[in-house]
Length: 451
Ligand SMILES: OC[C@@H]1[C@@H](O)[C@H](O)[C@@H](O)c2nc(CNc3ccccc3)cn21
Image 1 (cartoon, rainbow, N blue to C red):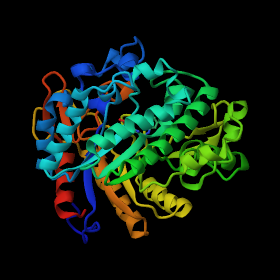
Image 2: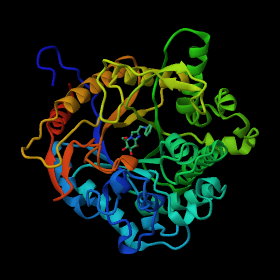
Image 3: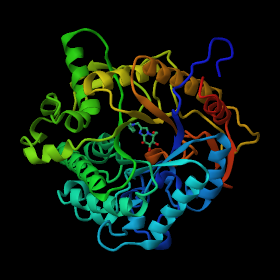
Image 4: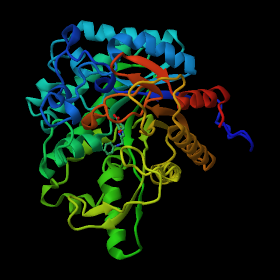
């Protein structure tokens, strides 16, 4: 809270939430008839995840969600963004339905509604059913049908009472991490596969939106993308061109097809021989199925220079020495959030935006000896990014809400449990939750709807 100057007030009805993802928090990956996901396989593959960490227990959120919802309520959270583990409800990803999995998520939704917290459901947050990966996963063109069938099942089950839905979380990370560089599940390393996966992710998104419209579900559906503004290291032609390639590869690769019906022109240069022939017009039309809102995940920016050795975009980030960096080595750069939001408005129009993830990993001890647990760097970083959102709103961007990443310390993918993003500290030895000071700072902003 800004104790001296006039408070920065947010619009009436601005939605304040927090976010998680199934594989990072739930634990019990095979409970009650669930099938394995590619992240269950990946984390159990030696060498893939730091310290051999897995999601077998995580935050035990699958069982402890009533306690966690009570904590959300105590902080005054108005919405909770979480994901469905596809292989809990369809153990093989298609066909046979696991009613126990559907019943679990219905209980979570009803408990949230009972607590006055609006569910915001992500259908896909990286944990593809392993059985679908055995059929090619995101490389199989049939996955758009598989995803649409899964989405339809969820809309029929929960569509009467869930106000916000998104199809995919960060398709760029799925393709770049899972298929281009191989650092995330399923761990492939091929530009050809990355381009194919990217197209099928876009097709699946569009088919998911069509399924939402056909299901008659209430609420609104969107797409969640990670955006990282790219600033040229110099005004040299080489650096300017590299910056455009980096921006096209991360920031425009998915938004241009979904919101403009075209592909960023630099992608043919970035992917080279791996870039496919122009896609059929009817597929581009599916991809462009109109969405109701856009989810923006923001963490940092990058300052870009030309780098012929950096594959595939031939551009690399210039370290910003002297700036505050997080434990994930991301520069803290709140102005980048304002710039990103105004960039979206100027390029794609003023569609409703939710900041679906924003947060920071700074060191917290494994066990919390005091409540609240001091976390000054995370608290100041939170305040600065909320001020950046306020600035974007003041510039006319239609930002509807903000979700802190994350509600809980959790499994940070290949980093294991070594990076803590939570507003709530988790002692993994005891599963005890402890509020961090940033949680109380966030609660004060929510209570005042002002900074
Ligand atoms: O790393 C923090 C979170 C992660 O826990 C979420 O599951 C995921 O949605 C998420 N996306 C980003 C930003 N995008 C990104 C960029 C490069 C590598 C990995 C993630 C950060 N985060």
